[in-house]
Length: 493
Image (cartoon, rainbow, N blue to C red; front, side, top):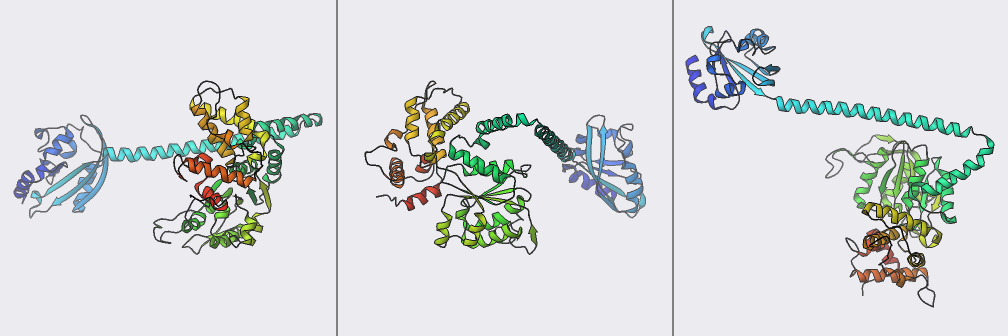
């Protein structure tokens, strides 16, 4: 039996890439394959006839190997995947998985033990390094959170100290705060016109409560900035505001995006998904383009707003959440209700505290501030230094009706900064031909908007979306532009 095995060892197992060694009943090396010698950097004359755990004058004494061979193996026919670690003189530190099997023989003294050795050093190192990295990152996050809490505590203490200032400084403090608001502009809401100041006033009125807010206004007026300003002034500012654009997803995915789903809830639901309501628990949920929400989901949204309870798709377990709702739309929801496209009860529930963002054409005094802000911002990003804005350019910008509002203004200014050379801003868009008073006979706003959108579409060969399209030039979403085309009866001739 022993002789036959050794013949097999030489003929077959000698070509195996895994280190293999045959031991006799006294745990002395009988035979080893070439992989064994290569891996441990030793020669056959150093091993044959030597006890396995005493190879190399004790330098090969692997911890635990003696106990395994002398205690565990005699009681069992095999042991599998026993991990050992050892630092060798010649090959350094190794992590190995050992597998041993007794090869039975009629005579006890002829029994052999086949010991297989797998080098898992690199794999275990990677795993341990990953575990260590996770621990380190977790510790860093805890420190960051602690630092953030400490910073907030310091800020709260400072605020309390300000409140204790003498009465004679109160008027000056209020004035300075007002100046700071105009400078910081509530998270990039730029302006000092009466119209925008009224928006700031409404933001301050409602920010500290949990009341539902509905932000109204044309596309590009900055409705999301208002939502962020309300959130950042609220008691929920410690967590990020969660946003969902109701027009950005197909109707069949909106429900899953809002409320989440369980694995297998529908075709393609390969794993559980947490919805926006669950994600926004304890903070603010901003529902942009709420007028685009499918009618069949509006009742479910109303139920969640009123009760704070919902179920994931495919689940019967009710979830409870504490979410502050801020919604926004460029549609006339009252008209949508009349035409049966929006639920009246949801409209009343959302319209508790409306804030209307004025269009840019009603904020002419803010255009110089906006132009200065965007030119500086864009120039810095593009590595340019434009600090001269000619009066003729500013006049042209103020005379233009801006159907795309602030978003269109930013797009026009970015093209102008890119195209301008030197320190002077030049406008290359044909704004002078779209003057608000470009003809002797005054037109309605709708007529001006229709003419301009038509001209842009003709300029882009009626390319509505994509690069260099009418939507990009106007600074509008594709869906919004198509809606405006339908409303204004704009068709390709």
